[in-house]
Image (cartoon, rainbow, N blue to C red; front, side, top):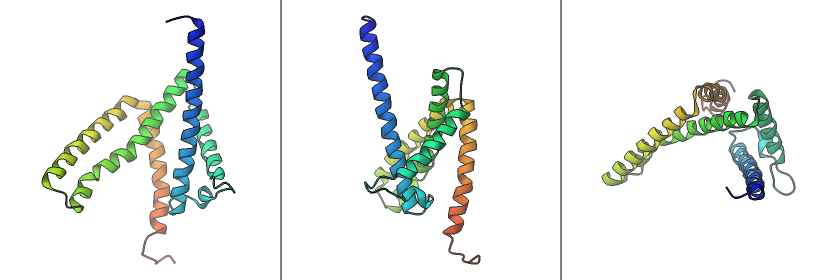
Length: 172
């Protein structure tokens, strides 16, 4: 729009912003994984911290998994690969969001909110679910397919955790 120098400066700032965002995401993933490990929803290794209270092992495991996913989705050019990973990330993040929103009405009833609060929450929650479903649709067939496969693998781990925390005790 202005000249090549301005374009290069904006490109450099965009790269810096992306690197900062990626680092922030890595630290967020590590803390979420640590919190999940602390309540026994993730393996113990994710909860281990170094002397600075940073879950470095968990970060390295997540990095390895992310690199594996990046290699599995390798594309002829960087823009295509970025779009594939972006759409996959959107889908994977929409699943728990939709599942959480579908429980909103139960939570509102259990909290004995007023009829007006319930109605408002139900309408907003339903609109949010519909919008989220549109977000899943906008990801495209490939992202939904591979995201569903990843989600189904996640249910394997959920089965082990649910069985471990079961009060049945017959397998003790």
